Image (cartoon, rainbow, N blue to C red; front, top):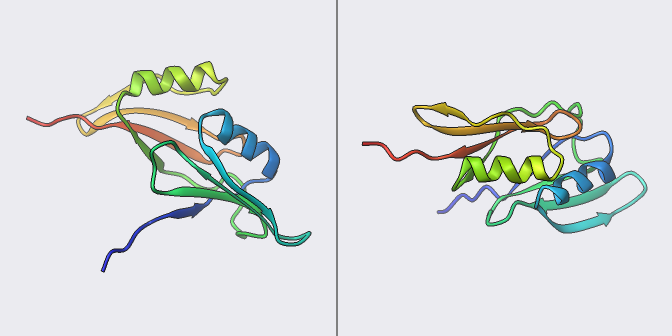
Length: 122
């Protein structure tokens, strides 16, 4: 049986600001649905990804900005960093590790992301 990770909820303080941020960095806005005055669900997907994120109201009781370690694999860390910076995102320089090349950034609430370029071994 396959187990497919397809959606991760990120806690945010301002749904519209979060949606604008993720769309600005290239995520596709798949859904934006208000179930009630207390519940709003916004699903966003990075280009080429089978896993989406959800931001909204009434989705989680986690503190806004409390998620750490979200990671996206990219083909070219330098190009991905350049895209983020071009789109107004504060991103780290490319950092080299034995297990990959990384760029780090956060959303407006402080949810922390890493972009990883896999490095071929051997």
